[in-house]
Image 1 (cartoon, rainbow, N blue to C red):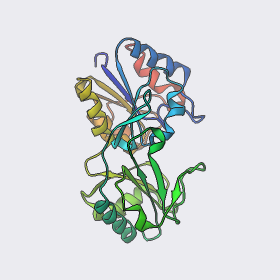
Image 2: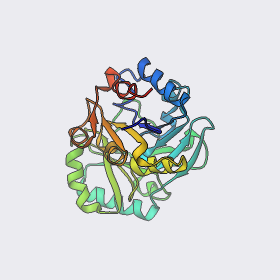
Image 3: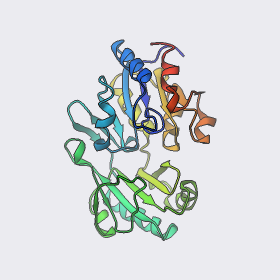
Image 4: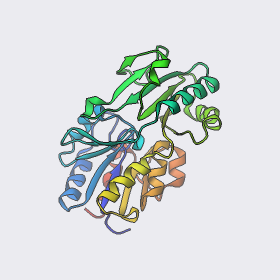
Length: 268
């Protein structure tokens, strides 16, 4: 592949190390490629409010596709550019499907409204157990979760693996929503049907008049799979899930060993 015109990267397990920091070598090569006029975009499952600590380490970063492709966040202007939401009726159907297939589950939603990073709000039912110690958001009954559109639904079963949850829920959900995961221990992430990191990245590439063949994308978990397949050159981190290792055009070093820099330094 020739030098890319757009570089896209996942955050957790890809861009960040275990210390939540971007390696100095990776920061340096990203700054060089932006200085050469190459586009750079973060593509993550995170909501916008979890992006500023990452962006603070990357002076040239401007755009972040968040919530697994469901919204585009402008870091510089602190605003949501667009959002692809799940309608309330579909949310209600998804809750019924989840409770039927996974009776012990907890359910939460991410809601987006016009505004900045804090305008995407996390609301969970009383039985939801956060996958991360610093879980945030409000608590509401399940009936209230489906009253407004959401960019993402999260389904949590701590005693299950995420793969087992997909196997149980996917046949019931069908094409009502897109199901994926970025956490292996009992957490599913649902987006509107057809919304993935690939569609979010494709929208950014189209706005920049960059074809898929000129895009390099990096990732490590199943929610990155469609993005790596869509990009002209999909790169899996050395620490990636087996599904990505099998599908990627290239496997680089781990996220803790500047795997992104090792690829991009060929051109920049």
